[in-house]
Amino acid sequence: MKGSLWLVPLCCAIAGPLLAQLVLELDDHVTPPGAWRYSESIASTMLSAIVSAMVGLTGFVVAFGVLIVQMATQTLSPRFMRLWYRDGLQKAVLGTFVGTLTFALAMLRAVEPDSVPDIGVTIAGLMVTVSVVLFLVYLDRFVHSLRPVAVAWLVADSGARVFAETPAHPAPAHVDGTALPVGDPSLVVLSGSAGAIQAIDREGLLATAIRHDCLLVLPHAVGDIVPHRSELLHVYGTGEPPPAERLRGMLALGEERTIEQDPAFALRILVDIAIRALSPAVNDPTTACQVLGAIEDMLLLIGESDLRGRGELRGDDGRLRVLVGTRSWEDLLQLALIEIRDYGASSTQVARRTRALLDQLAARVRPEHRAAVFEQMAALDAALQHVTADPRWRAFAALPDAQGIGGPSEATARVALAARESPRSHDEPAPDGAEHR
Image 1 (cartoon, rainbow, N blue to C red):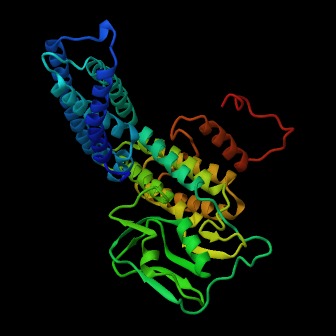
Image 2: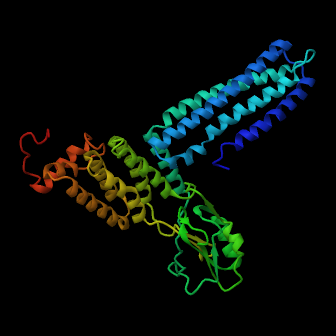
Image 3: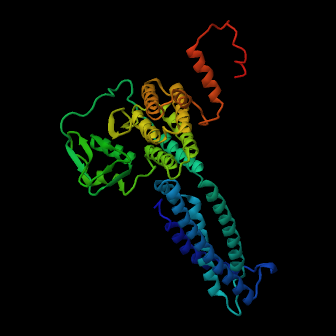
């Protein structure tokens, strides 16, 4: 229902005639001021014009939406459309247009030679004004928000919000947090159909596990694609297990992944936008560098967090009740960087921007996460060694630069590199002109 474009307009289409009926009742009991009174011809003309305008605007928004789908699919990523379908402004605009249309039609039917719904005609005019303002806001927003960099930050913010809304539940000090189930499960729940795991009912699973005094283990992470008749849940316990159908209903399967509980899907969309910009047909490394900025911000949020216990749900007593498959820091880092490095290593701009990203991660992430960052640094060096034969240009491409090429980090990197190659004491004066360089 969140991803549907028809539900809100349908509700507004039904609400329009209902509101019209209430307004007609109000019109029978209230005498409007003189400025709100209309003749039969003026009222009919106004309402007919409103109906025609709303039909035209609704058709324009639908056509504009189709154009957005085509443009976003070609230049961004088809997976971004999952966010666009859920945009509240898009639904509000369509709902307002359709509601105004049905309201004006209901008012038009009530216009008679000896009876004119004056209040209803005035309200219809106000609804048109609101519709036009919403249309202008809609047009301005989507013209600006469909730029690749704007889409990248929108996706990164959505992924960061989902990550922040999934807190970790590490084991308390008095509870053995390393205890894992042993032996065969008492119940294995199989999927009834194929699809991607879009979301799970965490609270429902936890309540069910506590009620039946058991441990529920989900071997798959949210976002994984499972074929039909795949193992969805393992139930461990000595008592009566919960009904399989009830447990199966606590996992939502669909055709495509969503960002609802899957921050890795946000990284997937960002990487898709970046590598599409790096394709020979587009050849836009600057866009890839801009997307790397959004990826960097999201990776910093994840890398600075303690990821232990993020897949664990515990009761009030601290006992582990639900264990959900999660992605490690290494998994997320590889997802974010490997393909961009594969397609962008030959671009000096992308290589330098990636190096700056890795330097930031190495300086800020938790100590247990730094080994994976150093592995990515070594992989970047190996990729540069493979694609760049000239050692001078390879050294230039290996410098960190937050802008890719031309950023202020270039001078800093040169000074740091020179200091490593020819160290001298702090009391030794710098060579002539070194300060300027």
